[in-house]
Amino acid sequence: MTDMTGTGPQDWGPFGRPLFNDPKARALSRVGVVDVGSNSVRLVVFDGAARSPAYFYNEKIMCALGEGLGKTGQLSPTGRSRALSALRRFQHLAEGMGIAPLTAVATAAVRDAEDGPDFCAEVQRETGLKIHVIDGREEARLSAQGVLLGWPGSYGLVCDIGGSSMELAEINGGHVGRRETSSLGPLKLATIKGGKKARRAYIRETLADLAEKMGPQKNRLFLVGGSWRAIARIDMERRGYPLHVLHEYRMSRKSVLETVKYIASQDAEELRNRSGVSSSRMALVPLAAEVLKEVVKTFKPRDIAISSYGIREGMLYQQMPQELRDRDPLIEACRFAEAKDARLPGFGRQLYHFVLPLFSSASAERKRLIRAACLLHDVSWRAHPDYRAEVCFDNATRANLGGLKHAERVFLGLALMHRYTNKRDGTRFEEMYSLIPEKEVHLAEVLGKAMRFGAMLWLQGAPMGEMRWFPKKKELELWLSPEAEPLFGEVAEARFLSLADTLGATSRVKLRRRSPTAKP
Image 1 (cartoon, rainbow, N blue to C red):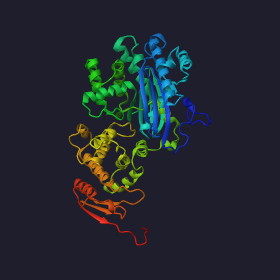
Image 2: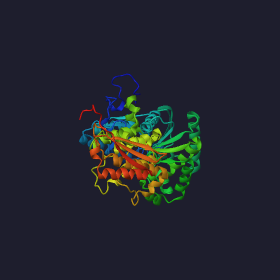
Image 3: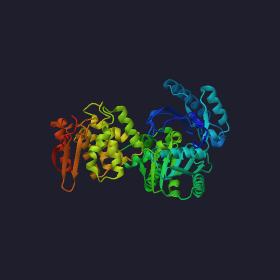
Image 4: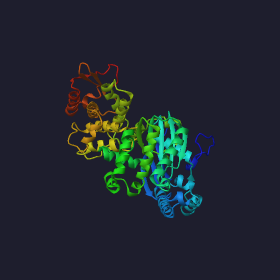
């Protein structure tokens, strides 16, 4: 795949066309990507916010193209048949969605197999779909760029495991550095003769060589790939973790080593059922766990994060102009949601400035979450009033949002819940509240109640007034603009008093008189 820093006007890699003609674009036209991996074949159709694309359609078929490749040198005949059938289906779906042509890339199994070129020719002949076969270093780079789509400016080591290979890539300040590829995929490891002892020796020897080439990598370890995600699911099950969102799930080195032991000690079928891992994926988990154990021991990362973004997202990031890459994916997704679903698009910005005096000493990270909450405060209005608060929490904690830690999801969810209700007890989400300190729970309630009150002063293009908060005196003042005064009725007053009560403050309301020279 050609580097998009090239100067050729037609230099658009597998897409064959520019996806981001306008760097100022907020939305992404629908685009479909197929990833032909050693273990699975997947179609993803992206849509939505350009900087934080949503998954309009996502389908995976476990084909195991690379099964037996280490012994025969060829793709699995059964895998070939299943993959061809899957690609026919995907191409037909794309035509029905009006998004043809699809962009397809293939990784280790197809590039290593003797019959890989024949398989690609058969696919093109049968479906019209051209497969771009990428080498290991390019696979590593695209996976790393996928991570950067969700974590702009990150530092660390990206480790992407597929069925037949494992890639490493260094990311530093938003750029991809050193890259290496290896044969540490579970399907390849399954063909090593000599049993577990020989396999362990091979893994350690390969990782020692990778470590020498990559150098010290003690920052964050980003794990990309289905086998890593399956291990993370099992880690969640072992720990009784309440939020089952894999993206941005964090593990420590100690937790990983404990989970590897846990996997070895459990009945595979029972563990699969408890953790929700598919049978075909579970078959690879013990081998992948052996690799992860040695990766963690070799590189000793500061912490470990699961990334649901990989090659497919990296292909999108590849085409993004730098101006678009520099945007915050969370805020872009929230802006897109507001524009699409809010009753009064644009009011979120006004609401943000209205509630901000309550958080004047907040960090930039906190203000970012406040901005996101204000942009999302009205996007769930179509939900039934009895369930609107729960829908808000559910959306915030489970939505496909990049650049959002699990604790930040819970904070955002609680704030949006309190946008619609004063109470949070008695919901099915209560165990998730423990993921943030009690002080954060209280701040989320303050934000939610501030938005709940501010939404009553629903003006567009006219000043709402302002709130003034004196934390040392515990005093909350409301200065109403003349335009907002008629909106300050009984319900608005009750919500303002509820906010003051949550702050433990006394309150007063003042009217800002219209200037004598102002026009009516």
